Image 1 (cartoon, one colour):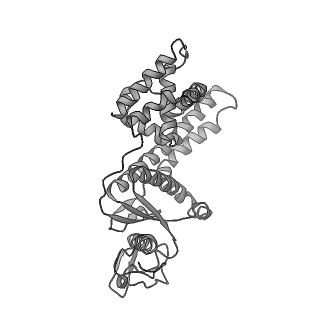
Image 2 (tube, one colour):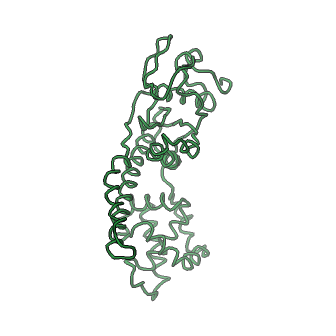
Image 3 (cartoon, helix red, strand yellow):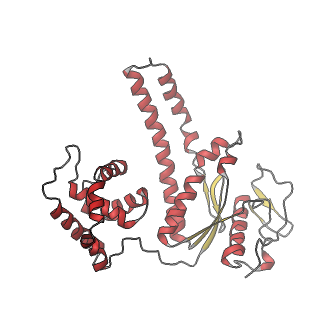
Length: 315
């Protein structure tokens, strides 16, 4: 039995048991639809965002009037007593065991590839295979417009309708920036999870790094924390591995011979070593990240003679 057939049977049983329950005047969904969604949410056992993505991506035709996420979960809260009543009825939810329906996402096919990823403010990400993504700088790109909107708010009278309109326009602009950032990072995480089986990242303390008054705006604008969390969630759904390594000296260490660039500064974007290595500093850091993950957890990824000093014994 497919998941669609299972959801249909579950809805029919809930609908038969909720005959006569009135529909809320401000809801486009019938109570039986809301309770069915609540049961699916309980059975799937994931967070609100992953559940809503799974539902809207694969099963929206079953619920054509599905509201946006926050509205949906408010409705689930209103009908939580009905949902709890059905969850306590083994005869109803026994259909899940009877037909052996798997609601969890299926892991992706293995690709046999692994990658180290270095995040930064010049390149948003750089990978160990040489790929770089420029930092779009969403907030900085919109600062001029934000400045105009903020001044407009300041010039309006407190409590006036025009001030409320100006505040709403400013909020929409901030929301637009956040949505553009999330959209880009979501697509980036999806790309990494689709292509690679194992992904290594630096375990950065972003809160502490944001205390740097010269880089704080750029660090927070880059959305490293959101990328790290979203990548971990997507990897868990797809059966991939994400490993975090010690970020110390990944940029200052030669990824070929293990030598240290003592005079390297943040303004230096290219590294060259006496061993013959010459490449972008972020790509060099990404290679070191991958090697550290290989030594610590995956086994040696590269021959010992070509790697940096090991953080764990070779396997």
